[in-house]
Amino acid sequence: MIVSFNPYVNQNINCKAVSQKYLKTAEKSYRRFGNVTSEWYYSIRDDVCLWKGISKQDAIDTMLAVRKYVEEGSMDAYNHVLDSIKKAEV
Image (cartoon, rainbow, N blue to C red; front, side, top):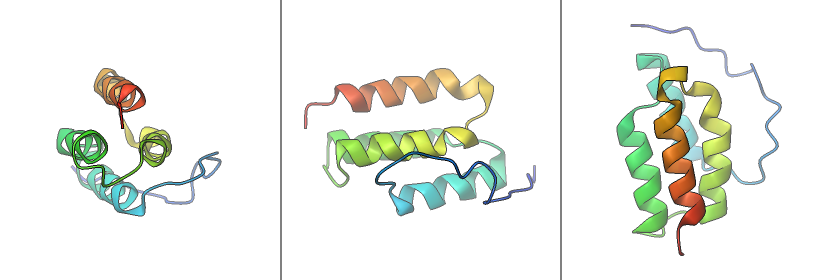
């Protein structure tokens, strides 16, 4: 399934620091599949909780920026990962 993508829609995001790596991956996933993949969720969560490759706050900001790419049926998974990151002890 090919989904049209306009990067200029919904640019009113009040985020301080968004990981460009994860944002670009989410955009690519959205263009290709129409949603953010589960691998993306696992990757950002693990990068915060296990590897500490991204700060907790940057991950939260990135999750908030990517929310517009999450389809309604995937909101439970999105919220679960966001809550996991918010509760992470880093």
